Image 1 (tube, rainbow over the protein chains, first blue to last red):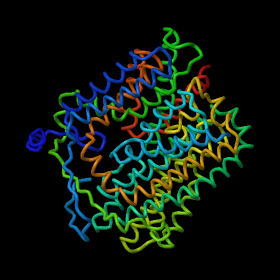
Image 2 (spheres, helix red, strand yellow; image 1 turned 120 degrees about the vertical axis):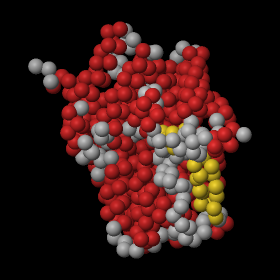
Image 3 (cartoon, chains in turn blue, orange; image 1 turned 90 degrees about the vertical axis):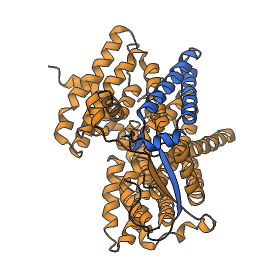
Length: 91
Length: 451
């Protein structure tokens, strides 16, 4: 359902070479930052475990976001036929 | 060197291959921001130096080849290093030759590694005796390095003009932190400023979204269709030598060899320069594109490997764009490594050779196999499952984390400031290399100007 909504609307912007929705981007930035810094402040007070907790938090945030947000790409596969025309996606 | 150490190096290399295979397929990931934080984490965790080195070597070999694959299959560059080959890879894809293009890239990467490892080990050791004298002038080398990179950049005048202001920015922040007691007097904040520079362009484009007018002016897109050319996997595991013509092999070897001697230049720049030069040797368009992807794939490996290995062995200070960028944590990761005490000082030549060989050989073999067998499958998986938002999120999270670790909450804003300034300069044509060099040269550069 979510996918269809995105299909209809033309509201994606390009950042760093790929398309994002601003709302999803905001969600992603907040969740990633909260998970990372949360884990960091939760860690025992020495540099190494702080770093590892932080990186762990970043990974957890990444997984949450990956599950929550649909990628803005419609992937189609073609079995390399010879000589397709030049109508592929842009860039 | 015990058996368990060798075992750890093998495990670390395999871990690097796994991690960076996945990351490599993600379009648009910047090498520095995916390599540096993880390497830094390993160093700070007290991982034995040889294990860190093997990990890093496996990581760059893996990342360089995996970055090239989405370029061949989709036409999206997997990373900065694969942007030079995009035009040629797209052309081959349109001709229905994506599979050929991957084979040539994979073999090219083998050749690049094969040439770069022994050559740069040799060059490093030859330069080492000279380096002892040079090193006492290291600040000067960074200043000269910055001037040199400024002069070969896109915006030469602004790059030169921005050197002192940038030095003021870095030293200014450091002094404020010292005054406020946020960091101890002997600590020179580098890592988080460094990442601030890397993330600068991204920060600028994110901040532009906050400006209503600029946001509305941005072009809008509907969801995009990405066409992945799948490759039949059955007959696909070729003997490396069967995938290239003699000419392609020769060009890849010679270009990689030349790249080793130019290790102080930017790897992307070198790949474009030497890659395009050698592709001109072919007349027919398909032949030319095939020659280009082969040579460029070899070059991306050769430039990266020599850019790390030579400064590590000869100098111990990060005096190449690769060393000062993605490999920075091997030179400077206080409190474990400093410019006076890092891999260069800790490891013997023999230890260097063993760690480098374990990392590069393992990664070459495994990634060759993955590229030949699973390229299309992994590309489809990554494009379907991993949203670009998540990638941007984890980058920003990394930066926040390292900023806080380096200088407390206040430093988040310091890094934001560095990002804004450096990102703006970057948009105006001052490349990363100049900014990185100034970060190291800042204290000495400012002392020169006090009368």
